[in-house]
Image (tube, rainbow, N blue to C red; front, side):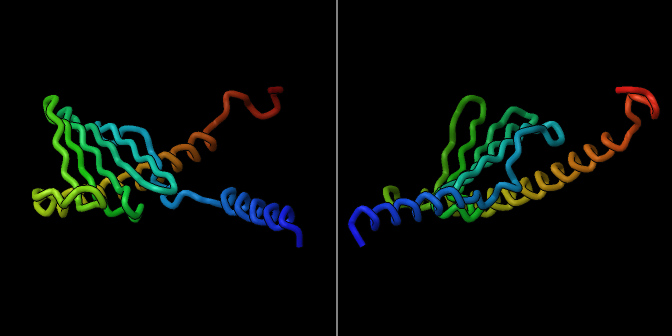
Length: 144
């Protein structure tokens, strides 16, 4: 087999692999309000983040960017214009001394928000079905 054929096969295999990539947590993707809180969950092949703007104006960003396993490793809070950052150990930084104090509660909140997102998406889906089943503005026998 020639070098060109080998390289072509490798490139084709790589391209097929890339096109088959799926985002692990697509079911949680969300941008909307739940009980007055603005909630945005974004994800890709590498990381996931959940941003919450609470009704009191506090903004909290939960990040999972080390393993993309829905275990947060960074928390950012913006309170009255002051940004607080807590993080687990990574390749360049030692673990934040306050991480152990906040990580368990932050993970619980993150998990609770994921549950709320799934419930809200299901509620929206059911509402869509109800809307479709409701009477149309067109009556039977009339032309559309």
